[in-house]
Amino acid sequence: MQDLKQDTSKIDENIERMDDVAKLGCLIQEGDVDGVAKFLEISQPPNRGFQHYDFAERTREYDTFATLAVKAKSLPIVDILMEYDYDFVESDVGDNSPLHLAYCQGSTEIFDRILQYAVKTGNSNIIDATNYSKATVLILAARRGDRQTVSSLLAAGATASFTCNAHWSDPAETAHDAAVRCGHGELAALLRPA
Image (cartoon, rainbow, N blue to C red; front, side, top):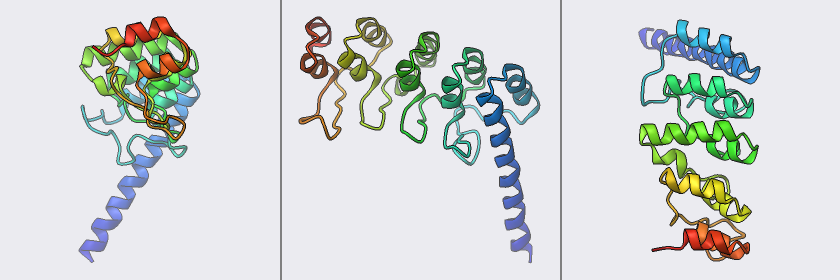
């Protein structure tokens, strides 16, 4: 009987946490900066350096809180989540990291803030995260010929030697290879392996 009671308490605890995940997820999706700040002030603070909930920080839509904040294009919420050390590496259900999302949706301020956070925390995984096609943001920027983003990523410590081995890349390509293939010679020179 005691085992059943312990199991039930764990279920109740998980339901309570799921409710908190859903609440915080909704506040972020709505762009409610004050609501997010107040929620995090009164709820149990997240453990630094660990996943904050048993559900890997994902809402029912399988987004992380960081990806939701980026999708909501809310720099103030991104800043709040950074204050609480939320995970900016973990991807959404489409395997897009917060940095990928910020870059692809053109949220320059959020992109720059995430880069600054990666450098400040020394977390190169934020910069070198891969998406569904195993491409880093550096590879995406090289394909697009985006010199400013390539330069920012390299200055922040992006790894130029990572390869994308998606089904359309035969063989796997680096950011340099992508720049060459897409006809961006100036970028290819910048990304040339040493």
